[in-house]
Image (cartoon, rainbow, N blue to C red):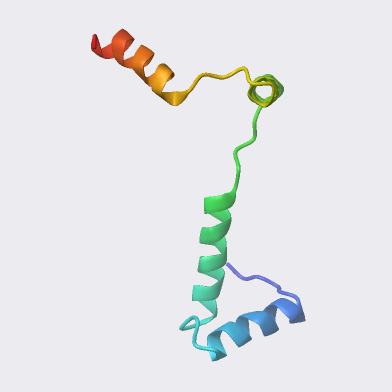
Length: 81
């Protein structure tokens, strides 16, 4: 794969290699892609986003349970404890 990079990006890559942060330009690009993959958030459908918003609203208004209570209920339901 051949890429055309802007002069600013090429300069940045060269600086990273010259500073000893990476052994070569390919390593700089691979590191950037790896970081992008780690931080890339999945696309969420509108229904899921609405559920998240409702959950946040409930949390902000005090409508949540303490973890110890939720954990005890789940342990009882699934583990019979």
